[in-house]
Image (cartoon, rainbow, N blue to C red; front, side, top):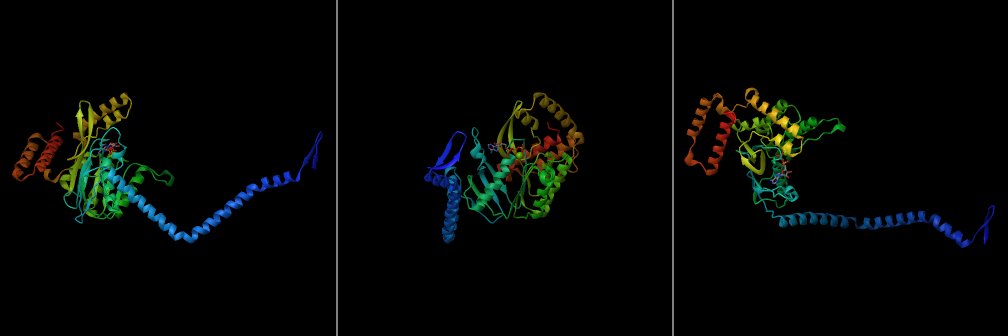
Length: 375
Ligand SMILES: Nc1ncnc2c1ncn2[C@@H]1O[C@H](COP(=O)(O)OP(=O)(O)OP(=O)(O)O)[C@@H](O)[C@H]1O
Ligand SMILES: [Mg+2]
């Protein structure tokens, strides 16, 4: 034993083995680190000599992973192989949103058709209540086109899809306060980018452009943007909006088609049917959806009253888009009725397909409703 220290009432000793042991423990951490680093560098050297093979293998595995995943969902969820065409045409029968259809638990996903081309259905205006499924539908179309172009099967019954050069979307409200951009500024920046870079071979998805500012500013911007895309860019476009006045554009611009998401009114309630049908709608049921979301009854009742006031004043103070064909038609019962009569007389009933007849009837009724003050 070697004496190490004398304390008031004790002596401390150590033995050489203990000293060795102490050294070992105190330097162990350092040694571990050294050893780890040594092994790491050795491994790195080993990898370096094989780097090309390893990277190629990783890439191949990533490819297999993607392809197997796509094949697996295609098999599991009944995807089909889309046909590719170079006729500038997108036709999807019973398309579904690949993600939303998986997330729904109690409801089943309602499939919908899509027709977009560079002629009579170039720009689709989608109206319909809040919560009806407009945004879902538009994103679904963009996703199916993207998946097709990736080489994947798609969730639909049948589809023929043309390649697009870019897909542009303007979706949702977000801001970027950190870089000094307000919500509306972000929205307008995105629209500006789209108008600058889209071509006639692009697919444009515009979800409620103009929502972030006053109604009239927003509607004016929305309409001007649509006109610009329609006349200058000529890209295939899906446009969802709550500015119901815009559905009149169908009558003044070629290739613009109105669609809406169907709902069924049941007493005070509405049932979302999630079906995209031809023709526009002039109701958003916003107050109704606000009630579903749980806004206090007092607020809802008050909103309902205010809405009725606005509705009553709308005929007097609204801005209407005058369709070319109807410019001379005064909004009066007898004159309007005669215009309706003329339109009906002009129709070649025998040459119409059932679906054309149905669409025409829908349009006439819609017109009658609009002109007749929503009877
Ligand atoms: N085809 C469908 N089948 C079943 N459920 C659907 C379908 N489309 C949408 N939904 C459901 O409806 C919800 C609302 O849809 P979405 O956000 O597309 O509505 P919206 O019409 O864009 O409403 P808003 O005008 O408020 O933006 C979705 O989150 C989804 O759960
Ligand atoms: Mg939406």
